[in-house]
Amino acid sequence: MADGYYKTVIRVKKDAAPIDNITKFAWDDDDYEEVEEWVEYPEEEMGRKTVEEELSDLKERQEVTESAIQELIIATMGGE
Image (cartoon, rainbow, N blue to C red; front, side, top):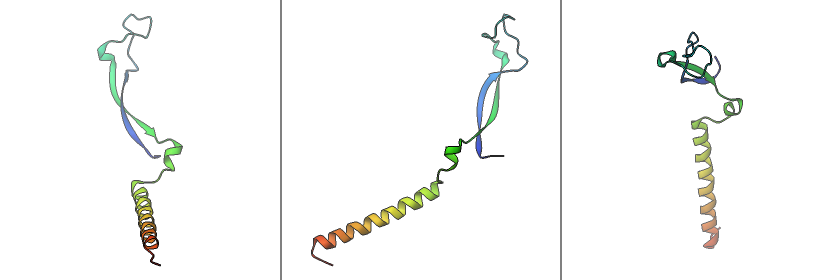
C-alpha cells in the first residue's frame, strides 16, 4: 500500500433510495453512513523531508550561523 492516511467521511449509502423516489437531492437521515477512505499523499508531498531531517538541517544551519557571528565579532574587535 502506498503512503497515505485514512480519512473518515460521511456519504450516502449505495442502496439508499431518494425520499421522493425521483431526484437524488434529498435523503433520509438513516441513508448516511460513516466510512474510512484511504487517501494517498500527493506526489509533491512524497519528496518532502521528514521532521527529523528538517530538524537536523536547521541545527546545522544554526551552527554555521553561530560560527559566522563569532568570527564577525572577533574581526570587529581587532582579533584574527
